[in-house]
Length: 286
Image 1 (tube, rainbow, N blue to C red):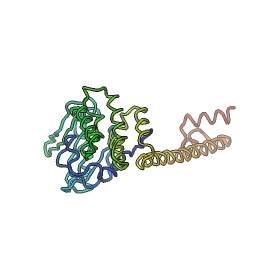
Image 2 (image 1 turned 120 degrees about the vertical axis):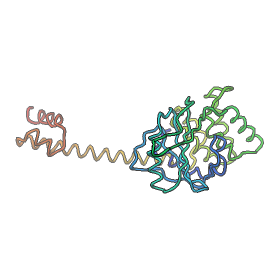
Image 3 (image 1 turned 90 degrees about the vertical axis):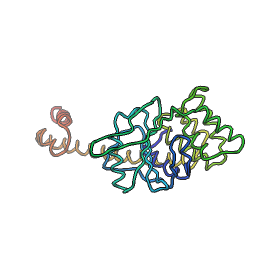
Image 4 (image 1 turned 120 degrees about the horizontal axis):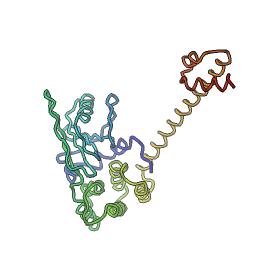
């Protein structure tokens, strides 16, 4: 299953209901009462990362900025640049939490730049007990005690540490438990979190397995519609580019037949010198 580039923007729309009150405490994010999700595009900042960020408005008025990292961030300048742009846009105080996955065990949390200091909170998901999380969710499902905390446990379990089961086996248990979640809305919430936070590291067969279980929920349809729309736009843009290139080559052929130089053709058509020489060779020298 292909996930569009803006997958986390789609997911963020579901997070307000998915992680209310203190639900994020089970992964180490305390005092984060989510009110609503906010758009994350800051055009003037170029962000290079493996995951797009998620930004949520908290009950106390601050913004919760979540970053997902699979590798150790060597310095915090990139996060700082992003947070400055966010703060300038929203004029709010920020709380930035970096959620580390994979084997990362340590990373910087403070930056001293002399005239100012910057800090983030690091949460290492691989330090959390995945076995215990799954056993808790399994027990609650069996006794009809499903909670918001279980939703978060199940959604982030794939990134936790396992000693009693292999990671592949853990994923199969996660999928089985998603199927047993009480109702469709709850399944949508869990699907939103799993797909948004894990889709880019799940194997293709794992994503397909999850899709088979969830069928075509509203969230998955939205993912697919976004994906199709993106590629339709790219196809139209590519078509226009190809049409413009064909027109430029046609003009170049006519110019060469009338004795134009390579330099003139390059200047007037925008073709490269190599392309122009190739067209002249086929048009005139042939």
